[in-house]
Image (cartoon, rainbow, N blue to C red; front, side):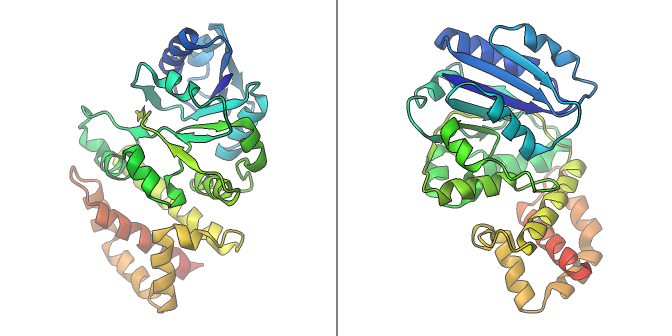
Length: 298
């Protein structure tokens, strides 16, 4: 009935799989949990115990194939008609998490459960990731459903019919970090598929420190510009407010000026964003400056 698919890289998923296995075993006979390691790491051995659980597979890829390719490979490996994808750094927080998704396993659908953050987590080393996640990601199903932007699709926690996935799949030509989920969501909408938003979140546990999250932000922002500049994804300018702002500045001939401003303020902004109380408005400005910098030095 349902295939639970978890791509992982250098992360201990034994607790997550144990919780999922416990719930699924109570609710349904036909299920499987497949954990696929994107290359061997120091935690590969620790995850080996997963294969000893009934209905569970622990697969190890010899080489790292990337975020898109591993999800496509998981889908092709799955044997059931509905695929429940989640990131490896998730934690189950509802006793009826699996049962809630099972209710949708009788139809073709795309169901997005949402993301939550531990309310007890206050470590200032994660302040930027926590503030962004709580303000921009951890929103109710009603809020997600009322916002028509494709950005509301995320790979962190979603159910999809295998038949629908076969029509889309993740674009394996995308290089670098970020936005494969944006393109996947757009393709689904192009097929006329409506997302069902529900309040069935997983807690995002694998938090990046402020400095690492800033680095990943830079990588994702650069990747967004590269994808747009290929000309293959013209829709991005309609779905990304960040890209819209950049295009407006570029048309006004202001990107070089913003690049110079970035050079002057980069260290100060980075320091503020890594502080215990970062500003999301400043974070947005930082990303815009990154786009202007890449445009100026190409």
